[in-house]
Length: 79
Image (cartoon, rainbow, N blue to C red; front, top):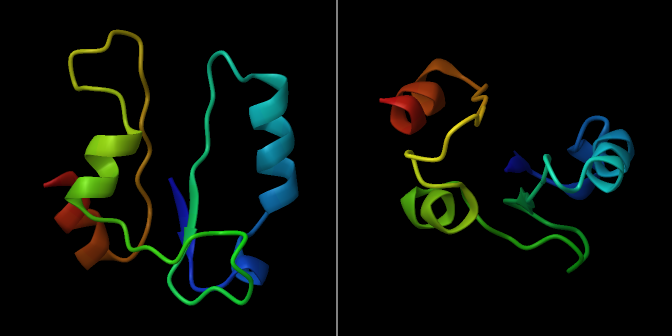
């Protein structure tokens, strides 16, 4: 899940999309923005509902999920 305020703020967006295409069987990206300019990327905040919908269940073997962001965001997402 890749989130930023606007589409133009998604750092390395095209490179990440290329990686997803090259490794679709192992790597997926869901982009969201909180203040979209165009309706291409949905306006959505990262919350429990989004995480449950987009992430694999915790019991899935061989998975890696990385979290980065300000300390408050990190604590709210990672516990």
